[in-house]
Length: 162
Image (cartoon, rainbow, N blue to C red; front, top):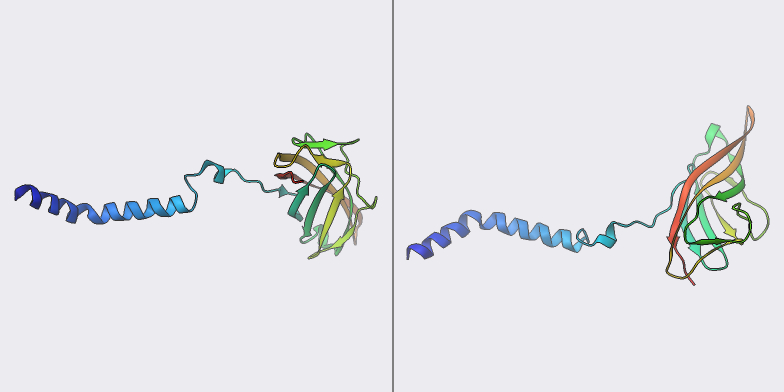
């Protein structure tokens, strides 16, 4: 009888704490906290005032979608003049590290819009293979002081597709 009473008192005293720990562990497990792959991000970063919306890479081209945020110096539009990638991993270049587009030109953009750069001289090394490429997106803006050239630095990250 004394052992049963002792076990019951133990459960009544510490049961709530044990239940809370079990609930927290289940929640963390369901969120993927204990999965090491969940901590690896494949998100492009940088390129302010532009934001990378998505990247699609196949063996024959790299497409990068950008959204345009507030431009520097109060400018209302910007002329994108180039995209240069350096030290890429998981990408093949046919030619220089400067990206060439399908149309041969880069767009003029305004705040709040989006645009896509289709790079025809860059491709992934294979489907399912991760790629990473730091780079510079160059653009110029016109404001009351004249025309200024800027370089938005960032990193493109993703996984190759077929």
